[in-house]
Length: 91
Image (tube, rainbow, N blue to C red; front, side):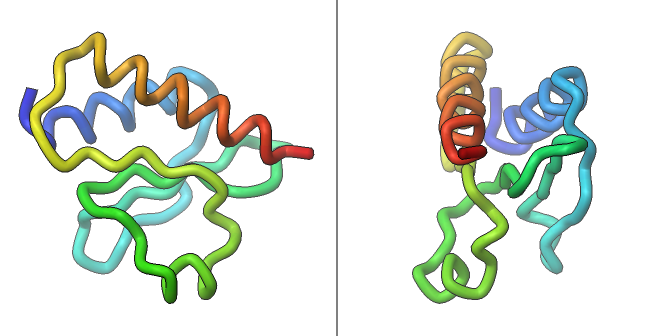
């Protein structure tokens, strides 16, 4: 699937996992999700964050970056890894 379709699919999968979409980047390329009762946010985007963005927004504890076409299987594997990172940072 295209990067845009993979991002849309990842958004739907996060919602199915109980996350809520809590924000969107100003250019519409980044989406932020929170889990009720949990600290931090998961980011889904088509580009990596810069070091400056990481410093300004420490609330983003895990990111799924989609820069090229992905299969459904690969997307789900990468999303599982992102969720593992998110849960590991819950402390």
